[in-house]
Image (cartoon, rainbow, N blue to C red; front, side):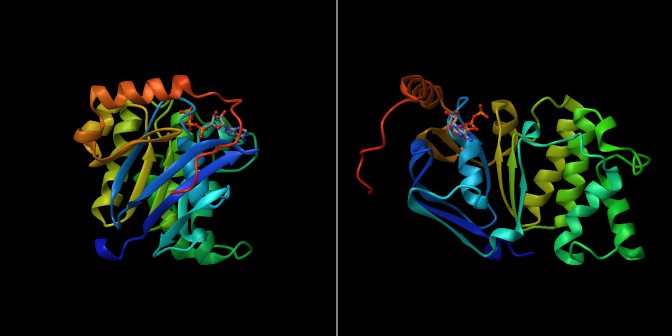
Length: 251
Ligand SMILES: Nc1ncnc2c1ncn2[C@@H]1O[C@H](COP(=O)(O)OP(=O)(O)OP(=O)(O)O)[C@@H](O)[C@H]1O
């Protein structure tokens, strides 16, 4: 997989809102092909909203999000765990196999070779032996591992992860982080919403810090400074959720 041919995302003065109240304001910049970016910011800063805008779940009220090199249905997107319904009766192997959906289509039974691929992905996330377990009986960390097996099988070149390590223990975090780093080394474009700055500083080359509006974007060491983090906190605290529509003209 050539890094230069990996997908890129160009944001041009993007504003995303819920019922016309902006959650992300005037964001411009590029996630370069093959880049690995941490998306950080205080609670309610608009991080999840930005990922939803990228996958097309929310349309910008103004500005544009353009993805080069991948169709919207070719993005691997991991939503926040709280957004997922785990009560649905489904086996581990079936949930993981959904990662092959683009290859197999929704109604075809998977063949022997594909089954071996699914089993290999389950093994890669350390869940061999759990194939027939109902997903509702898994711990939070085990469930997250199944979702990573599904991502592995999707084999997407653009991967968006929303808080992949929240409520996950250190060992699971370490193992899943190693998988994500491998995806980056393979030349995929990866964006991950993260809260642990130590994890970001040690592993992720680039960072976008937002607090409804962009605060800093670039090399992680230049972005995660005390001054930038303090500014993000101030901006977020000052933000009025009941504010009227954004009156700032588009750039
Ligand atoms: N479905 C929704 N309807 C209305 N407002 C929403 C909706 N989802 C998010 N918001 C609001 O948009 C703002 C940004 O939320 P978002 O979830 O994008 O933040 P976040 O940075 O991901 O936060 P966190 O770190 O707490 O997960 C918040 O004020 C939130 O209340």
